[in-house]
Image (cartoon, rainbow, N blue to C red):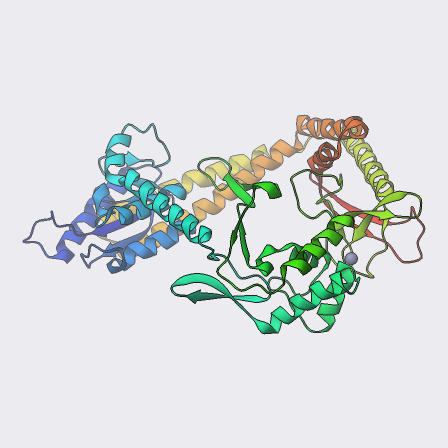
Amino acid sequence: MKTVIYLRKSRADEEAETIEDTLRRHKEILLEFARRQPDMNIIRVYEDVVSGDKLYARPQMLRLLSDAESAEFDSVLCMDIDRLGRGSASEQGLILETLKNNGIKIITPRQVFDLNNDLDEDYAEYKSFFARQELKMIKRRMRSGTLKSINDGCCLWTAPYGYRNATVNKRCTLEIYEEEAKFVRMAFDLYVNGGMGAQTIAYTLNSLGARPHRSDHFNRTSIVAMLRNQTYIGKIVYNKKSTVKKGANGNEKQITVYHSPDEWTVVDGLHEPIIDKETFERAGEILSARYHRPYHDGTVVNPLAGILTCAKCGYGMQRRPFNNKKNTTVHLLCQTKGCCKSSRLDYVEDAVLDAIRQKLEELRSLKAKKRKTVDYSAAIRELEREREQLKRQKSSLHDLLERGVYDVDTFTERSKNISERTAALENEYSELAQKQKAASLSNLEETIEKYENVLRLYKTSAPAQKNKLLKSVIKSGTYYKEKDWGPKQFALQINYKDA
Ligand SMILES: [Zn+2]
């Protein structure tokens, strides 16, 4: 366990002692305590000699918090828990919240505080200190303040193309940025009056030197988003999506939920419109008459969604219905004009399934060959021996400190070195353990089952389910096709999850 020591003088300390004496005495107590813990490695000591109440007056605490964010250690050792927080409840909250979110324990010579364990016996004590309720209230107050500003027509997010963020009468809003706004007007004009498609408009704007904010060029998608963006008629739209944190503690992925347009909240903004209402509505009518899927409403219609990218330009391949005179065929298309030639979606789907079938055959023959598995146990035993050796080195280090051979700086330096070697060793250890597991037959059998599952269920599944099935075995893939290639001629490169 990588541990740091935090030291600071508190008002309760004996007045007669100087700050330096107090800190030195505390450091000795804590190092002695650490020595008696079997798996504690002290990697750094933070000392705040300024006894300020405000967080900004405690530079070492700020450093500790930023190191905590980069997960450099697992626990903080201090004299008692109120050494960490002092000052306003919100600052205590910030410190503890940061440690908690990074899974860092607080250890005092008297007890261990695991902030992620609500059932910790010491929870009551920790809670009274944390002033948790107060922190919650501060957050709630901030949130309702935000909502009120938006309802008043403020813009609290990054300005869309054509605007710049501005503050007018102390309120956040947008100002028209003429250099970009002219391209917005041009896009609407070309779409509504010029009969031009979104892709051609993107092309035109790019060739005139227009550059969107978050990408190096416009494409069909960004032009359609522009034509749909109500900001341009002076509105503020929010509640389009919400994010749900997966798992209460941990850095797991967030889930984004997209709301349907009738759930959105639209208010009059404080900013000036760039486009008049009639033009905007006309653009909307043309858009819905065409084939564009305007917004992602959470349902997947493309079974290959998020799986294939174009081998030439790297953009995602999109599903796109083509209307001929008589019928509609659904194609898979690169978003970039003039890039890879498109193919019928069902042809590509069949090819992907063929590839999976082939991969399944490979896995089956691998299984047949793999009767005698590689044995990693000797290597693992060797690592265990090294681990024992490091432990012994660590304990002799403490003896050297105790006998006065090492001063504290030398000690922390050496101790840090041992802890780094230990970490490297643990890494290697878990890698080997994983390999050992992968080498076992049961694992391969599970994988084979997954592939069989995909092939068995695919044809009868709905597009969203098909997509899920494919993603259970495929990590990513690319699509490539030359201009003069036939309908069923294209090159797929598929990366599987179990390589
Ligand atoms: Zn492409």
